[in-house]
Image (cartoon, rainbow, N blue to C red; front, side):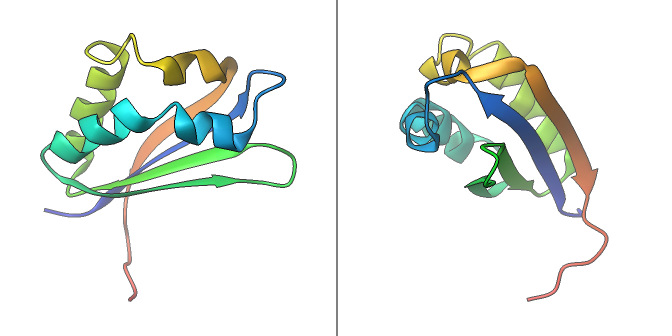
Length: 100
């Protein structure tokens, strides 16, 4: 298996902060921890307010399977209401090189 990164960038709904987004993710964090192939997750925020949510997976297939569940099984998560969905850019890409 090769590592893959799920990378999603987006803006928040006006009036919300990065902390609001992080707080709305508790159920998503629990969901991710239960998923086969989950390695880690990082959430960052640029100076312009753009959020980048990065999740590492054992494989792209693991990432795609989990992402599907976030939109179906986790459709009622409060996190969805924090995101300006018109700004979402989502992709899963294979890692070409890992340096520790």
